[in-house]
Structures are given as structure tokens and as C-alpha cells.
Amino acid sequence: MAGSAAGRRKRAAVVVLGDIGRSPRMQYHSLSLANQAGMEVDIVANGGSDPHLSLRENPSIHIHEMKTVKLTGISKISGALALLLKAAIQFIMLVWFLCFKIPRPDVLLVQNPPSVPTLAAVKLASWLRGAKFIVDWHNFGYTLLGLSHGRSHIIVKIYFWFEKHFGRMADGAFCVTKAMQHELAQNWGIRATVLYDQSPDFFHPASLMEKHGLFSRLGNTICSAMGNADCISVEKEVQDMNTTVFTSKNDGEIFLKPNRPALVVSSTSWTLDEDFSILLEAALMYDRRVAATLGEDDSMDEGQLWIDIKNGKQFVYPRLLFIITGKGPDRKKYEDQIRRLKLRRVAFRTMWLASEDYPLLLGSADIGVSLHTSSSGLDLPMKVVDMFGCGLPVCAASFSCIEELVKVNKNGLLFSTSSELAEELMMLFKGFPEECDALKSLKEGAIDTASSSKWSTEWETNALPLVNQVSG
Image (cartoon, rainbow, N blue to C red):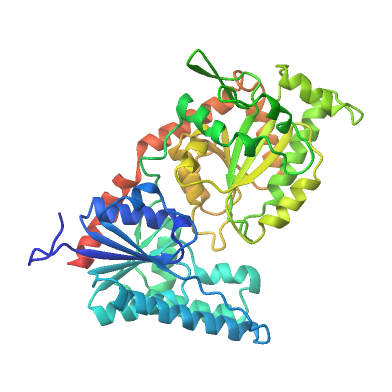
């Protein structure tokens, strides 16, 4: 156990100006600081979503929830002034929590972005309390702001100066890719340690029992169409404790149904750096291309097709069920678009899962889709890491450093357009579930990726030495 010369157990503060339940990497940091560095850990973050059970039940981890700042009744104030006022309130709140609400930490670990006002508040708190602080660079905040304002906007330029100035004041830094490490070293004067995202041990391929349990719990949601009836909702009447869309239980034995749909999972923040329209267009293309390949025309009775499928008829191309998880500003816009789609063999469901069920969903799926393209081009999608941890191969949007994570034709595929994604889905799912060798090969590669490294190993090798060095 780590401790000071006087025997006091060392203490770390993990700072997230955001929902800790939606910050998996900072949750994993907290668990490692407690379990591997032997520290007491105070998490200072906004509420919103429950973090993983292992975090909530760890006696060495203490969560201090800040209220989310929402400015109401000030519609007459300009946008810039409102942002400044919000940042000032957040700054005061952060300093109050870090200096007065939690015990004195030896080290503060802060997520970036957001940079404003987080980095300045943590720097001040570290100075006042005689602590060191480490920045964990997930991305660059100014590039995210640039998506909505443009890189040349004065607010973005100010944000960039702030992020660089206070980022350089840290006593240590982690980052998520070698490309980001190079950028920080060459253009920011910051020496950062690459700490790759890896999934923790509770991400793993789901067993048949876990799959059946999950699909039983989600049965009503899965069988409830988002708009009109679809190729999945027609199975609602056959749902019971022993039968789901994907599994069946007979005499205590669980098996996967041969005419089950293929399950495609995508986790999205519903923001500008993920173009969800690509997935919608790809789904529509898959639906139309399969119909054309099978010689079906527009006059075909889709209701009869669904009845045939429900009764066990199989086709060379399966139905696809897309389950989309996540929260974000554009969710309702895209849900409205989904409701207007007319699809024969494709259905969509959007949901927000408990932190314990999300790994089970990934471990039960057939393919994952990542739409993340990175505002900076220098970070990697954590969702893909989690998918690999569950042995789930991935079709990922291509951008500059994605191949640090996705190895083409080994654990996944890359796409740049909706047409390419549709083509990949047709290639992977032809002959599903038994005669789809390309999909099986990618799954083996994803399982190999998962077994090669876990978060605890990555953290002990690359993070623990810096934490020990900085905290004394």
C-alpha cells in the first residue's frame, strides 16, 4: 500500500467537469488509483449517470457530486457573456470542492477536455493545497469548440491559448495516442506518457446465459418499434421467460435461434464529431441492396415477409437490429429520421443502459460500429476499445490515427462513406449465422486483441510510475 513517510495513506483527486457515469476512462483511473496505487480517491464530478457498480461499492473511492451549471432566465444576455458567466460559476464551484470539500490530495488527475475553466481551477487548487496535478489528455478542447464555431473564431483562439497555457503548468501528463504525444511535444512543449485506452476485466464476451438474461430484460424495448411495425417488433407476441428475439431456453438449455437477426451496436454521443447520418444511409442501402440481390421488388408484402421470418424462414442475408446507445444533443433529431425510414430487414432501437448492462450488450453483439472521427484527428474512440474487450469486431469510420487501434482485416474494417459501410455489412453478414467466415475471422481477431492487454496491465506499466513520481 502506498503511503507517506508518516504512514498516511496517499490521496488522489480525480476531476471531471462532466458526468462521471459517461467518463469511463476516468472511472478506470479511479479504480486503478485505489486498487493498484493503494490510494484513497476522491472523485469530483457532475452527476447524471451512475458510474459502474465496482466504483460505487469500492470503500476507497468517494464520489463528490457537483451540481451542473444551467443558466436560466438570462435570455437577454449575449452568448459570449453567458459562456463567461457559466465558466466563472464552474471555476468557483471547482475551487470550492477541491480546496474545502475534500481532504487534501497528494495529486490531482484532471480530464481534458473540457479545458475551461477546469485546468485553471485545478492549477489554483494544487497550489493552494500543496499538491501536484496531472492532465489526462483525451482530446483538445479547442478543436471540439471549433466544430461549431470554426477554427478562426476569436473564442476558439482564446480557448486554445487557455488550454495550452494551463496545460503546460501540469506536473505530468497522459495522452491517448502516439500522434497526440507527438503533437503535445512538438507544438505545445508538453511531455506526455501514452496511456492507451484498454477495457477493464468486466468487459468480456457474454455467455449464453448472460445473453439470454440481457435479452429477456430488454425484451419489451427490443420488440417495441420506434415508429411503425418493423421486422423485429413482429416477434413481440412470442416473447416470454424462455424465448427472446435472439435466444430460446428449453429444458434448462439455452441456444441461439438460427433465424435470429444480426445485432449491430453503436455507441454515440450524438454530437458533431460523429455523423450519424452515415449509419442511417448505410442501413437503408443494406436494406435495398439485399432486396435487389434476392429479386424482391417494391410491391412485395413486407408483412408476409416478417411472418415468414418469424416462423423460421431463413435468407442468405439476415435482418439487422441496430441498437444505438448514448445521450447527446442530436439524439431526438436522428430518432425522428429513423421513424420516417421504410425498411424491410433493418430495425433501430435507441436506449441508455445501466453501466452493468452495457458490457453485456457489447459481448452479445455481432458487430460494432464506430462513427467517431475526432475533432483533432489525434484521439481514439474509447467505445472501440470496449468493443474489443468484449471480443466484438468493429467497422470504424476512418481518420488519421485510427489504425493505431483498428487493424484492418484482423479485428475490424474501416469505412469513409455510407456506401462502403453498407458493402461491409453485406460482406460480413452473408450466410449469417453459420456461413459467414469473414465475420468469424474478425471476431477471433477481436478476442485476440482483448486478451493481449487489459486496462490494469496498461495502467501499471505506463501510469503508475508517473503517479508515484509526481505524488512523491
